[in-house]
Image (cartoon, rainbow, N blue to C red; front, top):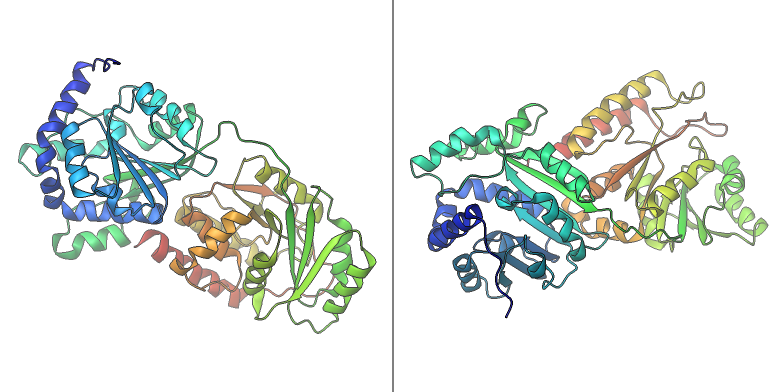
Length: 480
């Protein structure tokens, strides 16, 4: 029989304390129910229901149960905590074990969609090694979610423990979000997003709700919040391959650009589909697409006429019918050079990113490619959306966006969270990718002037819609 590893004095003290407080753990949670309710709510935002979830340092299993996994596994090295968890949530699986013990961790059967460490990282003796050993339980889409508290709150938390308002606790690791990000990087995980929440962990007659929803999310202020979260993805052993691709071209009154698009799109993968979605044009665009299909029989070119109006509807209907594993949008005005598409394909096929966004605001533009007011508005909105989405976006309205078909289908499945709100099509994808915690990578492109037809963007009408998107994103991604 294999002998259990000898614990250090610190870990032995942590386990003894956990065993001692296990029976009252849920009472402590109820005593601070506003804090835990807010924490669980944000964790549910990060982790959709019905996934395979592993929680390391699960305590009495309450968080794991709140996440409603299809397959939930909890691990804790306190026997008493696990007994309470098994009694409370018999539909979940719980194991007693030390997550820093490689032999024990090898007994867990993965992979999991999500691995959660809620406060657990504070008790580890070798955070980097523990994180590194999680790779065998991961797949390419697995997300590691680490929740911890800000050390600037330590004096208040110490006081709360002293006056009996917080559960007793042994000394924890002093880790900022930057420290956690660094540890994840050393362990071959790529950080997708960071977030800070709960400036006021007490309800205080509803004041806590108002402060946490409408004040705490703002830049600078949010760094003073009690709770912080880091989401990461594995980047070890990413397999390089050449998946099939669909280049989707929404078009309305773009007859003069149809054949040029086909001629200029490079053959960047062996199996490529070009898919036009025609938007009830009045200049013969549909007839021109049909002529081009007949003229290039060796290429897989298809066309449908969208049932509704607007680019958003065109993208949704096209992506539903597209057969490629990788979905790519190319605007029919060709202001984004089709010759740049291989860069987008390589970025997603190599695993460097999971949502690839073009940026027109890096390289000098061709003359008259973008009017000054549009340019200024794009820069302003890019800063706002970078903050709202917790990932860098320099150009939300660049038409070229690339993602996998499987991720698009997940965005479509979760669309009820945001609803049918986006006439552009860009924000439906961007917000959906943010909700799924996809890794965003931007590729600068040289923005060209339109050579045929007229722009279908109205500066003031669409500027107002952009402002509405900012407010909508704040409500759905920050103030909830």
